[in-house]
Image (tube, rainbow, N blue to C red; front, side):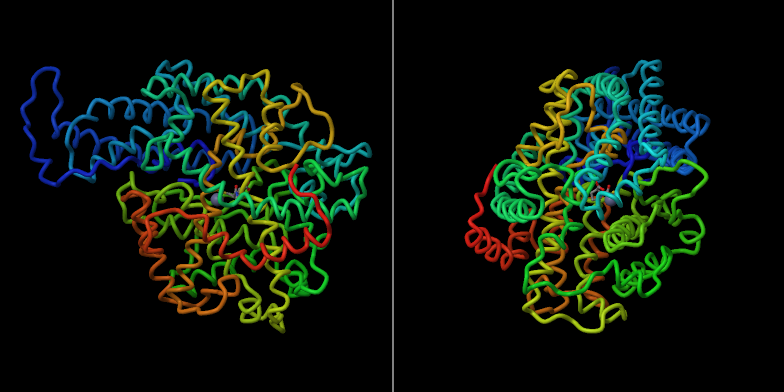
Length: 612
Ligand code: X8Z
Ligand code: ZN
C-alpha cells in the first residue's frame, strides 16, 4: 500500500482501539441462536476479510500507481473503478465488523476487528451509485492537483516543482506574489467537488455508526476521539511559546529586509515571503534571518551540486544511511521501478510518496526530485516509509501499517535529524565540522523547518474536522481557512481572498484526502525517537549534534519497533524505542533549548514586539 494517498489508504488499515481481553476468551460459548453471532463466525469473518482486502490492495496499488504516473482520462477512470471496488468491500467489512463488536475475541482478532471498523479514510455510503460518484470525485480531485499549472503572462507555464523553486529562491515580492496566487488558481474548480466529497463521505461515516468523518478520522489512535483532540491541544500548548519566539524573530528580520509596506512589525506574516508555497517550512529563507556570528558557513544544496550529486545518487546516499543502521539494502526493483525525476512529456503527481505495491518487497518511491538539501531530507522521509513497510512485511495484512499514522511519517525524518555536519564530513561532503559557536545557526535552520511546521501540521485538520462536522459550512471554506492560518501560524494571505477561491485545495493533502495530523504527530515523535536512539548509541553530546549513522544498536532497536507494524497499540510501540508510552513535545523543547534562549535575547535586543 501507499503511505500518502487516499485510495490505497482506504486499505491502509490504521491503528485501532485495543480491547485487552484474555486469550482464553476465544473459547467462549459457541452456541448460536438465530440472531446471535459466535466467536467462531467472527474469526472466520476476519480471516476472510483480511484475505480479500489483501488481494484487492495489490490491484488497487497498481491502478493507482499507473494513474499517478500517467494522468489521463483513461487511467483516472481505471483508478476510480478499482477505488470503487475497494471502498465497497471495505465498507461492507466495516459494517459487518460492527456485528461482532460485543463478542469477546482473542486480543489479536479483537484488534483486527476494530481496525476493520475504523480505518477507512474516505468511506462511501452503502448505495453503489453514491460509491461510484465518490470514487470518481476522488480521482478527479487528485488529477486536478497533479495536472496543475500556472501560465505567466509571457506564456511560460509552470508546474508545482518550478513554482516551488520560485517560492524558495526568489526575494522579489511581486514575483513571489504572482507564483503564490497563480498556483491557487488550480484549486478554484475543486470547491464543488470537495463539497460533494464531504457530503458523501460523511454519509458513509454515519452508515458506519460514526457521527461524521471527523469522528472516524479521530478514532484511529487507540483512544477516544475527543481525548485525541485534547492530547493535540496539550502538545501544541507546550510548543507554542517556542513558536511565538521564532515567529517574532523571523517577522522582525523580514520587516528589516522588506520594510513596513510589505511586512509590518506587528500582526501576521504575509504567506508568500516564507520560502515555501504554503509557508509550512521556512528553512529556505534561512539566509535572510541567519545569525551574524553563528552561521555555520555551509549550504548543503551547494555541497550536493558541487559534488555532482544527481537524483539517483541522492537516493543512494539516503539508502546508505539506513543500511549503516543494519537494514538490508533496497531491492533491485526499487531502482528500476521508482520515479525520481519529473517526466517532461506527461502529467504525473509530483508530490513525493512511497509505495508498497505487493505488500512484500515491491517497494518504490515516486518523486520529482530537485537537487536541493530540502529534497535530500524528503528522500530520507520517503525511504523511512519504505523501510517501515519492509520491516512489517511479516505481519498479517491488517497489521501491515505503522503504530499510528504519525509513526509512518516520523521514521525517515528521525534518520534525517542525523544529517549533522559530522555526518556530512564522514560521507565526504564537508571538509570541516563547524565549531560549537555555530550551533545557533544550525539550530535556527532546523527550527525554521521543524518548529515552523508544527502549527501548520495542526491547522489543516482543525479546518477539515470542522468542515466534516458542519461547524464550517461550504460558504465559509476559505474564510475559515485563513482564520485558522492566522490563529495557529500567525500567517496571513498577501492579498484579499474570497469564497471564489478555494485555497485549501492548493495543498496536496486536501484534494488527495490524506489526513494531515499525522505530520504534526511526526514532528513531535521524531524528536523523541532521535533522543532515545542517540542515548542507545551512547552519544553523550548535545542531541542536536548527535548522528546515529553507522550505529547498529540504534538500528536494531528501531527495527524492533518497525517490525511490530500496527499489531499493538501505539504507546507500546513508542515504548520499545523510548521506554515511555507517552508522546511528549518536551523532546522538541529540549532539542531547541539553546535556540529558545538565543531567540529571547534577540527579540529583546531588537525590541521586537511579539504576538500577532
Ligand atoms: O506529504 C509529505 C511527504 C509525503 S508523506 C512528502 N509531507 C508533508 C507535506 O509535504 O506537506 C512531509 C512533511 C509534510
Ligand atoms: Zn510521508
